Amino acid sequence: MNSLARFYTLCLLFFVSATAFAQDAHYWTEQFGTRSMLLSNSVVGSVDDLGAVYYNPARLSLIENAAFVISGKVYQHSTTKYNDITGNGPGASKKSSSFGGAPSLVAGTYSIKGAEKHTFAYAFLRRKGMDVDLDASSEIFGDVMESIPGEEYFSGNMSLGKKFNEEWMGASWSYAFNSNMSIGVTNFLSIRDQKAHLQTQLQAYSEEGKVESYFAKRSYDYNTVGILWKIGLAMNYDPFNFGLTVTTPTIQIKGSGSFHYEQVYTGIYGNQPIYERATQSDIDMTYRTPFSVAGGFGVKLFKGVLHGSAEYYHSVNQYTLMDADPFVGQSTNIEIDPFLKDELNSVFNYGLGYNFQFSEKINGYISYAADYSAAPDYQKNDGQNNGLVYASTFHSKINHYAGGVMLNFKRADITLGASLATTDYEISRPIHFPDGDDIKLLNPDQKSQIHWNRLRFIIGISIPMFDNFLKKMEDKITG
Image (cartoon, rainbow, N blue to C red; front, side, top):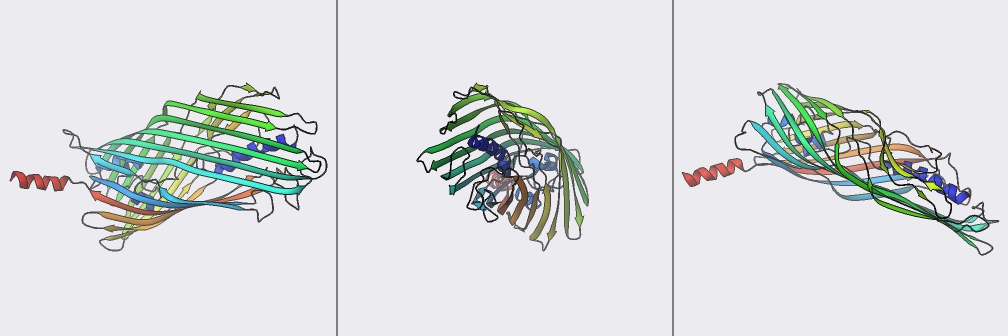
């Protein structure tokens, strides 16, 4: 194939790398519960709000006032900066940003008649999610295309993106053996949707008045439903709190996906024209998640509590997430076998946080957490003529920082704070849109840098349930 077709092959490589800014292989990107957000996930052994449904369900029986609901509003501003993304010099950078509501935890407790010594809770949370797109383009007059004699007018555009969302719905049970030790289990239903796309369009107009163009598009999407369990143990020996949890791999209930592929090339100047198109849907798929174990502590120190947590996630061996039927291109008669693979390395995340008391009604929070990626580095081509795509690609560590205050009132606790997630990483830049100084279309040895920030503003409120109020009203009515 000529330079246009080779260019698209390299675009697929960039697709694998550039969609990496979606946090598809990180486990600590989200936090659950307003106080837990300010402590950056460092609360496995010391969580004291209904974030316990996620962090450690055993803690539900040891929280002094467990009968409350959490409602909170979180706003976030995300920015992604791509330096030298098209190869047109150090100044060729792009920046995308978004602002809007971020996911927050909705949770509450309930009771079951005859099981007064047991604690029950429910929760709805977004476990993971990201929505990003990138467009790059170029326009120049010069000897860009090898297949066209002399100089030509050239323009090119590339669009790629990745979007995924994973929602968890959980029901928890906890039982305290005594005031010092308890156990608990949360059963989660997980629903995940993921899609990604790459579209490339190149065209050139020669001085002879001929037009050569190339268009290619490749995309996939899938959705899956599964169940998993988080099992916890909590111990409270003042001034120390300890916790241990185990999270099971997800058991898939159902899942399906689709692939879309097309490639069109005019093939003038003696080159073979290309026309291929294939769309497949309702493809069976398999989705796997790792086993993990976490431990944490909370210890009273000075006028506050020091929190610490760590979690180990086991690896997931490479497997075929989705495999479409092979198809033969109409014009090339080449068989293409598109499939989606995934593979996850083992990782070890950790976090530290400290909350301190300014006064009887004001508490402060500060924290840090390291969030490592489980995705291997796939910045290489396997040399096969197939549709190989990897589902998890972002292999950079994310640093999390958070801080804020909690105002304690008689009937409610109000939380105000902010958190910052940030990372920098480098990817191979096989795409090299030409400019006036360098008209080479392909330059696979170059690199591009990506800088990602996410700033969140947290406004939360914890309100006691109305059990006591209703009981008093009942007493007044009945005398």
